[in-house]
Image (cartoon, helix red, strand yellow):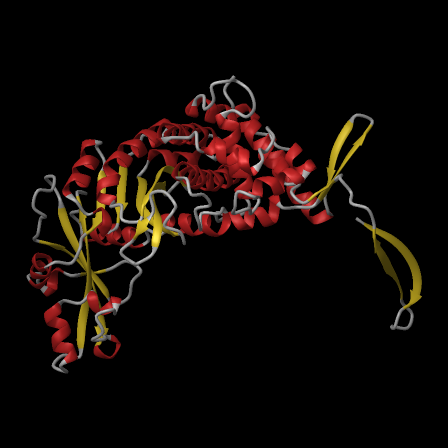
Length: 482
């Protein structure tokens, strides 16, 4: 803390006087914290019963009933990452903040203890976190206005499937392999509920793991999660070409859901595009110079009712390259590209394809479905947010169990910010983890105790926002079942 003394000095502006502060560094003040906003996390836990739900889902992780429970440890790790720490040493840093740690429902373990506890979490315990998150999401959604809650729960319910590589720099880490990009990495496979903005399921595998192999199990868990959260509408799965497989589509249909999966470009697809009459192309939604059409092509072995839609975009020859690394040129048919590069044509069409089992009969329905798939960026935002805001940019341990738990707690931190903003919105749009941390969590405060009254004192601007958010959270304590 700084010791302040005041002295009146003359201002350079005639007629005005000001006070200069002369400061010297004093002794450390243990009543200060840089994480005063953790008060909100503690009240969010009281309102939604997060720790209790995690304990019920995870189950016991130790033989003796002492120390932290599984739910307390999972929440503590998520809070460590929510405060901006991206290494295991972050546990020790938060423990050093005696006031900030004291605001939490349970103490924060030391870094070595955290690694030991994380290694006790296997696949069954991590799936327990998924089930607990679904229960907490149901309680948080109950706080939304009736119309918005009905829109999220009654559908359409969009679940996006995607994967993210996490590069590491040691082959000694368990279950990391060199990916097709040449990076030694682990790969996170996740399913994201687009309308609610929460993570449903996630798995950490090696850098060569295939979404077509992993997703069937994740599809069942994702459907169970949204149903447990109270959603009863039609479910629609979306995925890129990494999930293009008949068995993936069959699994989705078996769970009575719809799918939109990107189709890899192949010769049968290019032949089907060439057979489309010019009059059958319709304008795309919110995409100038783009057109969409249904193809007379059905992938072999796929469920009945599967159809393929195409989108084409016209490009001038000047923007197309002969370099095989050019992503745009790879979206153009080989014959068309050859004509353009030889100077025989001035324009060419870049195309992309989607397989779906939706009943799309009207031109407006086809264009709308293609436009919605094109805006499938929420799960990409999830990975970006968790990487830059919650430490999912690396794997901190050599142990796969520890890294898998670190991954899920980063996603749990993402869900925490979603639940917080359901109860106490910070604006019209969803705020990222880093923004929530800057506005609410990492706020300096002083702890005081007077006449048995304990208070946190913030600066004027921070105190007003935190007080408003805290009041909104406490107004929803009835959400927790008795």
